[in-house]
Image (cartoon, rainbow, N blue to C red; front, side, top):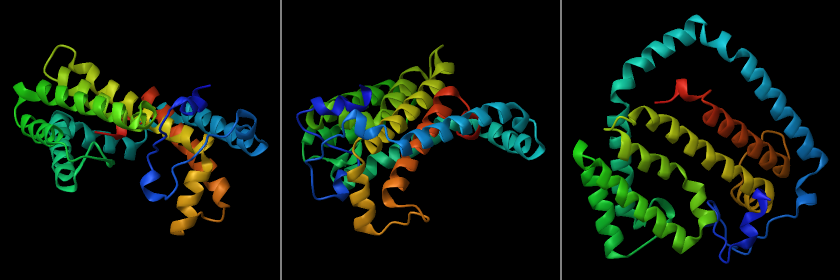
Length: 246
């Protein structure tokens, strides 16, 4: 049922639609999605994830991994600053390109432009981080109302960023990173759902731009990509990739 929620959206906008000419994409029916190829790659993904769970702890005790953890651990006190700098750069690039939150969210609204600038400026000071988060939440709400909730779900990571900005200077700051990882995983999972239910969109983009498929057919490559995204989403949500991310 989750895979077909987009059927109920009046306006279907997708995260790669700005690469394609058509907008009349219709999700496949459930029987059309559950094919033998789908079941094979589902089983392969589950097998791979089970192996990853089995080697997760032993892998973490290996010398090179321990050294990598040590290097990343030294960056941990600066993760908030890194996030703020990256977010500020992203917001300023959006201002210059006439978009907000994502390249396909176009705008010429003065309040959105002022909001982007204010959100970026508020990232300079610890005390104004919640204000920046509030503005980003309003922009995300605006995008959801304009383009549809199913499109804005591609960018659930923004909700994680909003939460991070609200709690990073509170007793709940230890929950900021886990929530950000979960939102990142949910974004990846939703993108995978699009590839599974509307594969024609991704196939059209890949065929039109001549993207490499590494020996697979375009259809199989898109399906494999969806399961890779699902696997990465699961790893982020379960915390397996958190040790390698800032």
